[in-house]
Image 1 (tube, protein in one colour):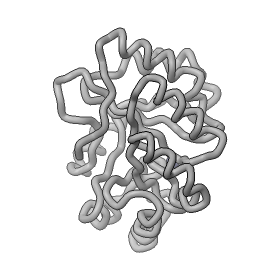
Image 2 (cartoon, rainbow, N blue to C red):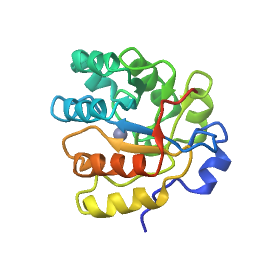
Image 3 (cartoon, rainbow, N blue to C red):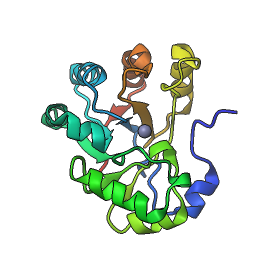
Image 4 (tube, rainbow, N blue to C red):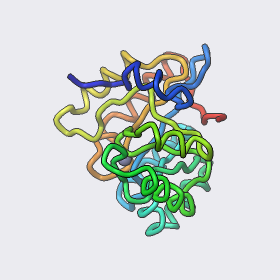
Length: 202
Ligand SMILES: [Zn+2]
């Protein structure tokens, strides 16, 4: 079974993690993990600019260090850079000390404020250490754009069905993602539904 949204227990165990913007208004927040990348980032930026939408890019620290011009380009378009760790570590298999030092090191190239755990995986000790410094952001809807087998139609259908006021949507800024197959159509759909896109204020 595919989980499009983190399970209820995650929110219960990690009360300070943000999954969704608390609002009754029809607003959505797009987030892009794993960039920047010279192939995918410019295409995503161009599409967002065409619709005048701002988003959060949870950048991989190693990639941000390698492509500082892309990071600048993301910022210059009014988007927010978030921290997605330096080495994309899996929290389940990494000690809390190593994990937090990886995130802190990445903050030199990304953001000192917003952090998204790679794979959405975080153990309690890592959470306790990191929440002192960062707002930890997961998501409310995940359309599996990283999985080619899931495909455009299913991703679009899932998004249309599952978005709700305040949804934070996780997408991926890398060439393997199918995001460019459906993002334009999804944006057009949301505009028809009177949703608008916003940046988080946390
Ligand atoms: Zn990632």
